[in-house]
Image: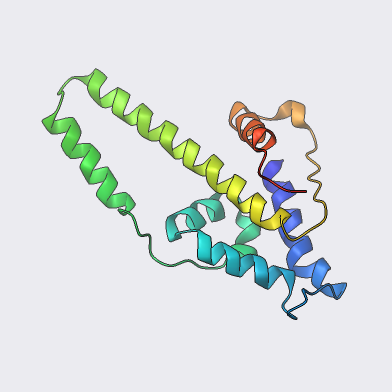
Length: 155
């Protein structure tokens, strides 16, 4: 449901808002301004992760430069080396993998909040209608909680 809401928001930004003739004072469309800001603030890995979670937002996400940080394959190789060289126990590997998963979820929540900050900063108010919230999974509810508790998202 949240992905659907984000897809509709992206469609509004890229299609409907431009049809209404709403442009910034510089003459650029709001979609272009948002896309440029995303390209300046996100690395390629974050954009790709957002694209996977919100495929309907691809047009506003655009493309991104190569990550300034280690690639995913480098991080996986480091994890494997640590697991082989460090504690050889299953528990050691398990705790490392759980930490990686938690870090990945936190990074995704942070990326979604940053995306919403960029989008919301260009509008006087944004409402996301999320239907059938009672059927949402725990991951979606955790994401919504992190968005609601983020006091820096305007409008």
